Image (tube, rainbow, N blue to C red):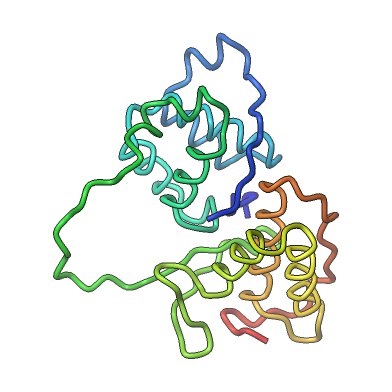
Length: 214
């Protein structure tokens, strides 16, 4: 993914490198979030997102900016904010975004909205995933995405490596699926943000069948 931060998440405390003072001072909340979603390196993406947490005036503002870039994280905006506000540096945890990281309760909507998760494949494509009997969702994400997060919390780096390799094997099979590719990339991204060195993804990019799990 983006490197989708891609991305609940058992994100570990990662110290954010400081951007040049003049650049950080002039950048707006919108600028920082936009640049983060376009960053190539996960470390740059996380640094810019942390700067956005400090620059944006509230939880709602930061969340709204992230929601303008569907698929940039690979998991829910709320989960990312809650986790970063728990494990990031003190200056980030003390930001207005983190101090207001309790979204207000809103009345339930009577409008039926189609549930769509936008994931990123190992070759950088954005694909839409919808709940099916073969692909159940937990809340607003595919169950397998949530399972990877649970693995990170319960089993750590080796669990993430096994989860990634499981789906990479499916991607390298004769008929792979976009879903398998998204799951593999998500596991890689979670490993990056939890500080796990599990190596890089190596795939042969077999023929892909959109939205079909192996």
